[in-house]
Length: 402
Image (cartoon, rainbow, N blue to C red; front, side, top):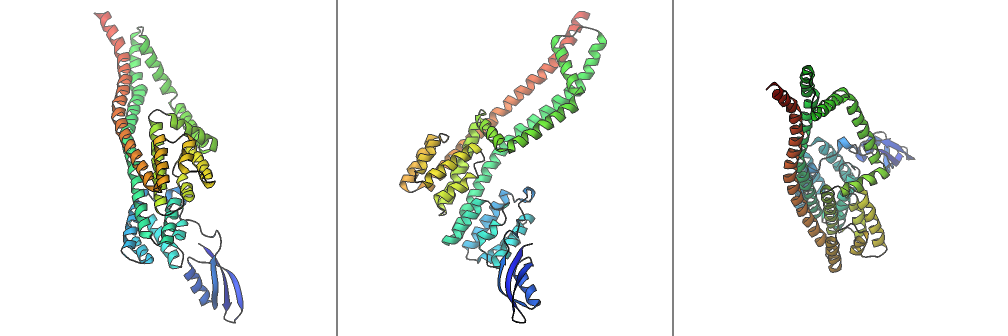
């Protein structure tokens, strides 16, 4: 609950000051008035308010935010006052987390706060990009247009993320099922077959000995292997969270065949689309670059963009600075430079984002079509080896009997 510092006059006409904890300015004012204290000024104490959604499990999904933003834009463009629009949004929102946030935002706006200041208090729900664009929309009187652009941006991001996740679901399911079948064969089926072979007292082929040895090792050390894997994943995750570990991981991820190239295109698409959206909303280039850094997700790109921002602040051309990094494709750099010279950089950035989105779609389609047969082939080879190792001694035994 926020704390407010106030200056007031009591019922004896004396000047007093103090602090009060209340849910809003209005509640604090009513409470003081009932006590015979009449406010002359009241201000929220610095750092007294904490975002209610800063925790990861309290964050609002992009899909809910995109729908809400589109509805917000429609309400504002229809001529409804801001506070009335927030009330309407609250009434038609089903998500309880977002509903609670909208209630707090409406309360802050009714107290006289600006919309962007009210949104800024909920970092878990509204990013720097969102708050910056709303601030620009309020300043220019084009809040409905800015919200419409924000909705378009969020929908594009959601569409791209959904495509990537959708393309990975089927291979992931195949991998999990294949791994489960392999573990079942090695820990339950192979030991029973091995007992039969041992009872025959016959020399076994080398491949069968290898298979039985692998089965015994997995069965006897299964818990130990799980613990080892958990420890490796835990400390690996901890290391990746450190600055040096993140840099190592980010550089390695860009070198992975196919996936590294696709990841690079996705990051460039996010960066250019974010930058285009901010610039088209009237936000200055330097501020737009700063906000756009956060969507890259890769420390190598972020560090280079920070260097670009410093050089642009010193007066260098944005396109030339991008070229100097050496990590951005020449075509993208050329298009940005042309847009910068023509004074239509946001248009060119949007075209670059659309171009890379199309390339990512093509790569996802190709990757999905290739992963399925490759995984089937790998599973077939593994299962074929197991079947061959089991059948070979049976065939040898049959030939001896014959």
